Image (cartoon, one colour):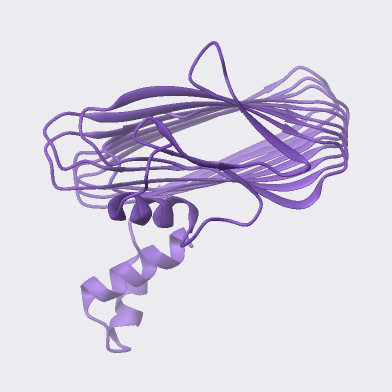
Length: 308
């Protein structure tokens, strides 16, 4: 088991708000190795034997418990792919905190690709938080490519908070979900790119059960010469409801491509998409500057409020 150094502690704080070891179950990973693990009576964690990753089993009826599984990389040149599977029983109510932080001060690229598969039992409620963060002054890139697959049984719900605000040079986020009867999925994505960073977000949500619903909302800011693409698709295969929304601010020489799409395969599928891209309104800046803020301070105030 690896000892956690000061850089890794800072990364854990950034991506998982961990200032000390969390209460509840956890699995901490640093530079490709296990850095700490704790199971509980209701949440079990086992290392996979056929590939890198873990299997998490949450017993039926588990409520008001948490699971933290953040990953940090503090060495240049590390490339890893990790497979984590979550088996969540019926009637659960659990918080799951993931995320990855990379500090790269070297000349080689550092990359973490995490593949998470969730199997959510009937009437269970999951809140999932995934934060990405990059730092370091090296020439090597900080690369994160997360894949999330969600399979939701009848009456289950999942709220996903996906955040990437700083320091990640390249990311491709892919989220796939299939919802059974009366299942509900809520996604809230917050993203900011700067420099020459690139970020691609892909969502494919299939509403298979009667009464299922999905609400996918992305808020993003592209600064400097960065590029973003949001590709969000909701497929209605039953009497269901789905909504996608992209709300973006473009600055400097940034570029944003929004590709919302809907596919209705049932006459009772109610699907809506919205997309808006624009710059910061001049009257907003003027109003804040009359209150004593500089133009830069006013701009940052608007950005912080937009991404909150």
